[in-house]
Image 1: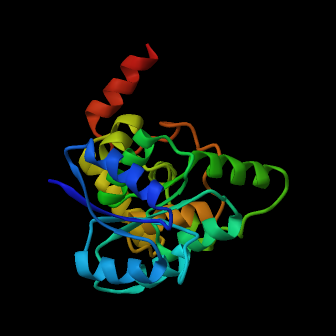
Image 2: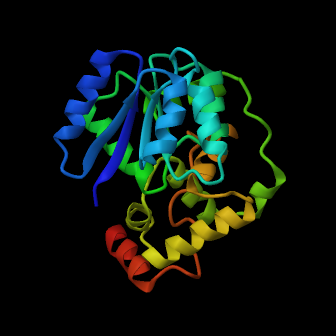
Image 3: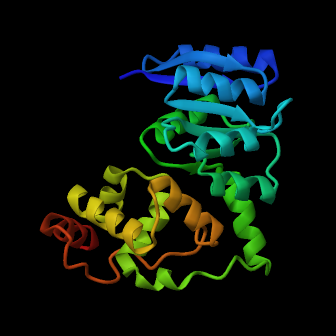
Amino acid sequence: MTLRVLIADDHSMFRSGLRAVLDTQPDLACVGEASDGRTVLSEVLRLRPDVAIIDIRMPRLDGLRATETILADPANTTKVILLTTYDEDTYVHRALRAGASGFLLKSLAPEELIAAIRVAARGDALIDPSVTRRLSARLADGIAPPPAPADLDLLTTREREVLLLLAKAYSNAEIAERLGIGDETVKTHVSRVLTKLNLRDRVHAVSYAHLHGLVGQAPTPFGALADPEESKAGRDRRSRERT
C-alpha cells in the first residue's frame, strides 16, 4: 500500500528536497504541498493524505494551530508530523496535547524522517530523541513533571513496560520481541493500558507518557515479575538467554 503524504513548509527548497526524498521510496507518494497554514487546512480536507508533514513556523496560520484544527475534526484520518528547528517545551507540549503523531527537528536524517512517516501511518507516535533526552535531563535537574495521575497505579508492571515502549514508537511486534511475549499478549496489554488510562489510541498513550515525565525513567527490569498471560515460548526463550 502506498502512503499518501502532504508536505507543508514555507520554504520551497525544503519542500522540493523532501519531495525528492519521498520519491525514492516505493511505498511513499507526495500528493500535495502547502506553503502556509491556511492552505494546509484546505489541502488536508481536499486530499485526505495519510500523513501530513507540517512545519511549525508558517505564515497566515502557524503549524501548531493548523495541527490543532486538523486533529480536532472528528472526521479527520490524517496523521500529523510536526517539523521544527526549535525544540521549546511549549511546542512539544502543545503538539502532544493536540495529538500529533510526531515532533521532529529538521536536522533529522532523511532516512529517520521516512521511518517516522511509516510509524505515524501505522498509528504510533515518535518524538525526536534529542528532545526526549533534553526533557529527561531537565527533569533530572529538578524540574518536576506534572504529578502522575492516580490511574497510573492501575497498571501492572508489564503494562507500564508496554506503555514506555509505546512511547518510544515500538510496534507490537517489536514490543513482543523485546519483552519475550506473544503478539496477541501485547495487543491485550495495549488494550488494557488504553482502557485503564482512558486514552483514545496509541498516539494518545505516547502523549500521556511524555506529558507525565514517564519517558526516560528506568523501567522495572524486563521479566522482573512473572506475567501469567505471557506465552510459554517467551518464558522459555528468556530462560535459554539466561543460561
